[in-house]
Image (cartoon, rainbow, N blue to C red; front, side, top):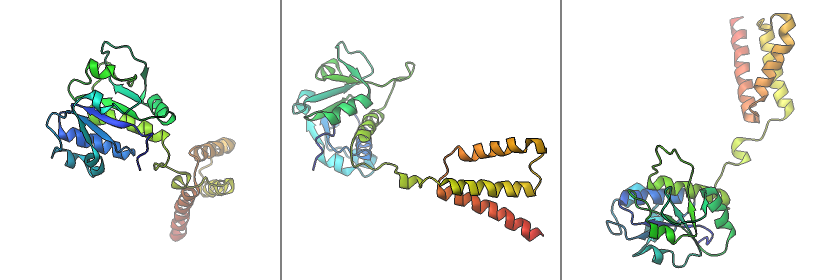
Length: 243
């Protein structure tokens, strides 16, 4: 079932099938599956799109073709145009992040327009939009390729959407209890003391504090603590072997 909050990606007069495929891949990476094509230069379907999609076939198979941009967004209540240039029209300007927040909060379908690879959207295309999406970009090199532009918007939408995979607490491991961390630090201190590391004596407290600060900064999880304890134990075994 289609998530009606998800934006429809509209590629206006795309030129290369390869770029359409890359855009489809970028979409599916972040859970978007509805692509609309406005007068693709080389027609549709395009044999160059499939290999570039790298498995995002569902996006290409469902892609719909329209003759005009107006036709492509006729059923959409919210239309955004992506552009870094002023096109002779005055529109509110938002970032991809703001557009994503708005998309999940409103009723009705949303479309995001992306222009041809070489020239971008024309003034008449931008005029159809309610708002413009743009990103802060190097003024001396403001060129994004089509897939890059799509992935910026798709990624921001994915952060607002439910049900997409994201790193979880279980992926990173649970934080190590203080007792485990203290035991690891004490283990290290004992090894260093046995090897005469703490010298001179009046600097020992400061040195130990510095070591504790270093070891507590990353926020060790239990697995990491066990790993380092294993390293320390290996040093002990090596010393015992030498004896």
